Length: 280
Image 1 (cartoon, rainbow, N blue to C red):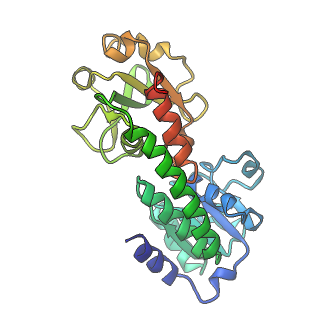
Image 2 (tube, rainbow, N blue to C red):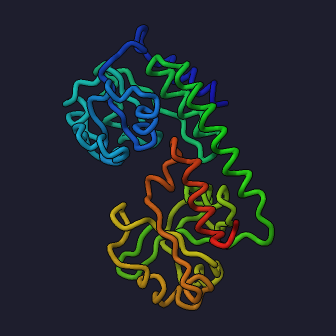
Image 3 (cartoon, rainbow, N blue to C red):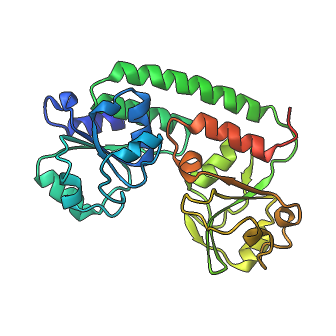
């Protein structure tokens, strides 16, 4: 399936697009892949979610990937735009298509195979498929090693509640079909909520039923609350959960944890280590 998606994406490019040198990356995982391929010298801009590696922040920022303006995107005169699924809005994409800018939407899937498909898609669009295959092979080996360690755990997996944010005491949590739920499962946990899809506000009843063993949240500075872990340990709906009673709060950088880019093997290993602190 991933190779079909790649072929469909590349079919939208005009002849000779692989040789284009002025590349705009939209989406943190896409930008990271460009760097891992060693093709960062062709980047002329990035979106606001592209913050790793640190040197990428020296590039012009064309705006948030889901709220792009044609003026912002075209201000860096891109010849090729590589964007994650979900970039938009549609009106901006239509304008860019009308302007004749070659655009590839990189397939997105919250799985190890999805990461490899992203790599191949970006590499193919940039005209360096051999680099893409080499990087995909390396990442695949790293992921298999991380997943083998996860598979070696015995006993019931910890129930993990991912909290996207806390706005005035109102918690936003992750349900099924989310990057958070996928990463929790890959790292050897089980997502504590399976009664809804996506991210939504949590009721006190939903939290009580979830009864998480671990609270997982983004590290401060990555869209997370500026408060400390006490905001969760003392939150009325969480205070009596096993996670809060045991002081089990794990924070990780959002783009690292949820990006499903080339750092995914490291993210799996890091979250697994946090969920199983006593494992050898």
